[in-house]
Image (cartoon, rainbow, N blue to C red):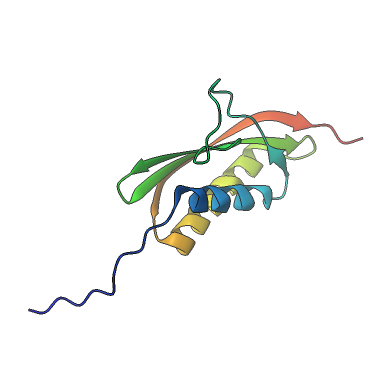
Amino acid sequence: MEENTLGKTTIAPNVLTTIVRLTTLGTPGVTRLASTSSGMAHTEHQPEGVKLFYHGNEISVDVYVVITASENVRLVAEEVQKRVIRAISEMVGMQVVQVNVHVSDVDIES
């Protein structure tokens, strides 16, 4: 049997981070990303607001957000989870094991 492969595709971690960041910031009710408060310096692969954990072709995501005070925190967090899972699976074909949304603060509108 002849095996037909086109080659290998490698996706850099910063691509996944960008997908998570843009998707999260595009979710209504999210005003900005928050510090991951790990006490460690952020690297190119773990910028502020996002932590990625790899399990082969699967990924877990921690995202730290600030939400508008007038929004339902639980509903906004659930929407972030749905959007991040959909974006990663559709854009890079990886399975998302979980998305943990950490609401660090709420922004009071003036």
